[in-house]
Length: 133
Image (cartoon, rainbow, N blue to C red):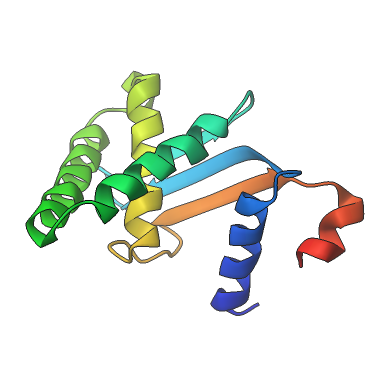
């Protein structure tokens, strides 16, 4: 399936009020010893979409130098958290890792492949699936 079609489907799920985010997988340099891999599932993940809106608002309100600082800060955080074993990362570090990776991928600072990027799983009413596609 072409990338453009996948992006359309993802954006449709995110905008559809009858779908619910149930799992986030995020990876940054996960093929290296200091990479980050995060899987967040279970419970209410509405916080993820809310926080991504905050990230986007900060991005839109920043000038070029501010945007450079934002990207640099997100990458520095990921590199720092990648030095810790996954089981020693706090819930907050895991959440912000996923948010940072999703943001960096959305804005093409991370190219999605097997070791970088995000996957989102949504719970969608099967009767509405045809409408969304």
